[in-house]
Image: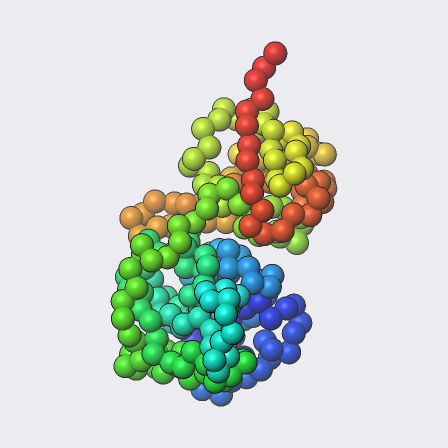
Length: 266
């Protein structure tokens, strides 16, 4: 079994080692890959759940995720209670277990065969993703579904905003939640792109290398997946050839709003 552990513990944080150790104790044959997302970024968490879950991979895959802002109730919490644990089975058989918060399931809600609550304690530990959740995940991974509770319908999950920064890669390319299919522009069109309060001109392209060095490209990127109806989803990206688009736009955070407009020819 291959497990993707997606969490907002922080790059290099020992919490990844603790949770991985607990999962390996309960599922000894498992290979675990850890992916860090920014603190409380449910949008980034949801993006990677979909990118990893809906693309080809090992036949036995589990995604275990934890990004829990605990924003469902701002009052004091008895027994350190947090958001509930959720089970998802995708149309390709991949199983997903983690906290339902914000946009964690927004990318995949239409691709799920089933979504259910998992009947585990919502309190009792400051570190539930180590002390409470792994035993439930292991039971389900081994075929025991007795902990599954009520069905969650997709309408209960927030819709994905289609105008946000979804991820910044190591090259400074900005991955967005703008579907490439929604962009109706001729190739090489000049556009004005706004990310937060920063505005820059760009060229609408079909790839980052179709523009000269130093040019900002607005183009379909490398991220996306095939939906259960067979349609391919691709997300727009901002690339600065020979540079760093993230720096060009003032290093925006994930979930920052992005808009674009076509520049009219004079």
